[in-house]
Amino acid sequence: MANADACRASPATLHGWSKTSLPKQDPEQKCTFENGATQTIVGSHLWPEAAISGPADRSLCSTAEMEKGDAVMIIGSVWHGAGAHITDERRNIFSSHMVRGSYRADENQYLAIPYEVIKDYDPEVQSLLGYSVSHPTCGHADMKDPIVTLGSKEDPFGYGSIEGQVVA
View 1 (cartoon, rainbow, N blue to C red):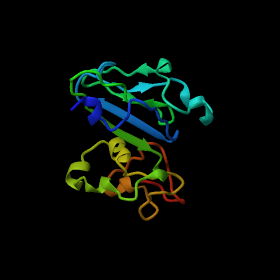
View 2: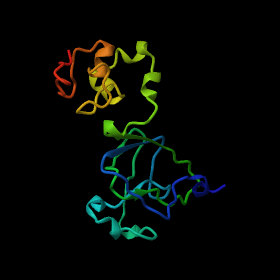
View 3: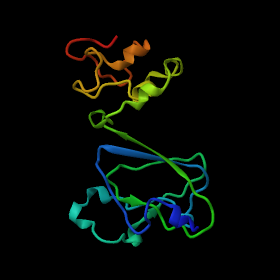
């Protein structure tokens, strides 16, 4: 089977999503133009939506070539997509997306991380994993930042009080 056939992202199209999304990609191995590294159109997040239609104009693209251990973050509204995979090499990219807290998923999968594990993480990591509020009060627990349930007395991103209650 050709690698391009196994790829869910079509190299014929580009897409852009909300400015509230911040995808991060980490390659499992070297990503090159030849093995389909992610392509972006730098500055496309500033275009009117009507400017993008039809097949991708690859002449406008930049390629996010990366070594294992590198990472790239792309604002979700930047037009991007998989490049054409023209080799027999395997190319896997792990992708995670951060979004505004008010756009959280219905299921809080973060609570699946055992307390014994997450309690020792830095407060910034705990907050990014979902133990935080999206102001003014989305995601609170008893009108408090959920990070206090982990024993943290810190307010890692300086949110301060929620409805008069100080996170402490």
